[in-house]
Length: 166
Length: 128
Image (cartoon, rainbow over all chains, first blue to last red; front, side):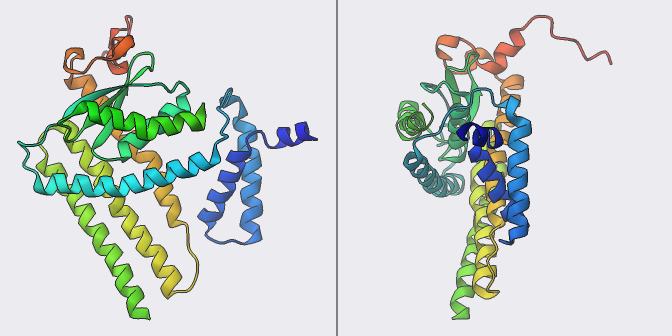
């Protein structure tokens, strides 16, 4: 029974996500759109199954919720910080800087999420990975102290992602 | 009651307008290309977010029907903005930065964009 369910829903999270996205896209909560969304949610994971050979298992749901809240809050702060730097800081006083962040994360999915988060949050854009994916290159808009930026990213985001993905 | 809702919606629109403007102004004011990348990736996120909040607020509070497909725009924006930024950053590294300009890549020695350039036998497409 479990195996049959597993064959029909090889990727239950993706099924759920696709259904929700379809219902939002249709913008009505009618049975019609839910059924069609569910249909897409069954077909698409089934067809794309070979592309997810060893996807990481997500277990720590409270941590995922916490991570999303932290990131959303940081995005609002990021906007205000960047706006303040753009408007009030003279260009000569600004210290743009490259920072290299050694990664403890190994799964590609986790590194992707970390890189995306860094781009969306205060004054940092992730620019490149090192050749074997062990370091992340980050550009800071205004960082007098690159070490502090590195430690904050590791402490604030990477620690949480490590608990979610690994 | 309607007037309070209208003020709330107007507030979100004004906030988004300000952040959209600051994002665009940053493109002019910041001098180096890498710093310019920061302005549109961040300041505009809240700019678009404000418009979407106002839109949800308008349909829920004034028209009295739930409309949430604005959330999808936020979702797609969060997926695409970092990728665009990464593409532009990689292009910049490719064209304008030498390996010695960038910080140490740790145990891997080179950043991925430079490592690609080390590969021999890159097919030559310039002829066609």
